[in-house]
Image (cartoon, rainbow, N blue to C red; front, top):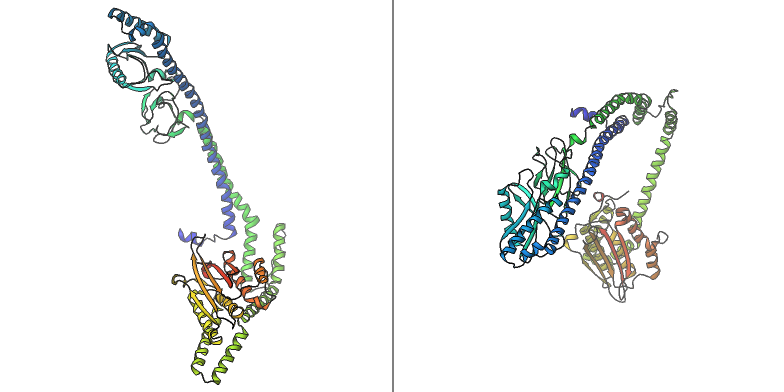
Length: 588
């Protein structure tokens, strides 16, 4: 299988057209499948929004009812005569009468507020409860009442607050059932109420959630507290919050949507199975399958049409071009009347192209020769004839006075100088250590030629000596210093420095050549600033050469800055990247 795949010409236009056709057909089929899933998401969203609105309405109703219970408790504590007597220190007979009046009042209030399951008044001095509660189905037993009293007494002992606006309701588990409990304290008296979660859920208990779905209450940690029916999937997750709907369950086939209460740490949620929300989706999936099958049947017909109209003429052109590539320039395209207008134009243009190949080859050869001549001319410009003549003149005078040791030293320096000069012209980049050694050799020659007229210092750290730099780049500026800055009146100091700037976007090497001469003339600095070409003047050919070579080698990543030092002297800064592009090869 791997060999067959390797034998396919993946770069051929035939393979690309087939892949292109597949690239059209596959996305279309993918779009159909995506539309199917998109439709599912739309249905999920609509069902979620509908149930979200219904649950939000019910949750706001529950919050409103809980607030109404709180207001009623406040009203009882502030205006009910029997409650006020229980709060005051009254004789025992009046206390018993007040308990009876409060019991009748609480019982009548339960009929007025059907969403309350229980009301109570608790006297702290007497440690007695007066409560009224509902037990329509016999679920709230005497044992439940005793457990409720015990839990209320524990909470009352912890409560220290007076009437507050919008107090928070608390959850309490009694005999396996959960209740929302509110306690308000006024002096020696506590009033409160409890409501079962089943009562709060009763308006939505008939909501259709299918055989495996349910309506439920969950606490702030996502634990179910009450459900309208037992959930069969044990992998349902209610810890993701209810800001938006989400899919949950073992196979992610349950839609979960809910709303959080503002009065109690409780959320009402609906778990709706997918099979209930997507009852009509099988028909849509069947349509997607039929469209996909039709697209697969249409694909071979499209490939046959492409082969006849496009692939066969292209194959004929490829065979002819391969023979021409072997050197058979006497071949021509055969015009086919049945070919399309575009291919006939290609055939005629191809014949004209073959007839001009020889002429283009000649032009290429001439251009290469012209380029070689230009490079040779630049190479010749690098050699300073005055320096060469002066060096021979020094050798002649040393021979006259029979200074054979100096003659040998001078000759050896010239040998090293010209050897590096010619070798470096064949290399786009050299190591900085080699370039500096060449500079030292050149400066030694100049010291023999101009004794006592200048001094030189080279300050380059060892870790930069292996930096790749264009050859003969530093020598250009050293030559300018020897030529323009060195005077017989006083010694000139030439300093070459190099530092690494690793704070830039990429590591850069900054090389500085400075002297203590008179510096650059103002007109030269102005020409450098505006980037004027110096090919018109022989004095600045070297500077122009360096700038062009840096541009070709590094693009806009390298720079040259020239300025005058304070109080005097010329300064040239060369800024080049630490690592050249393209493995150190010059850019075309």
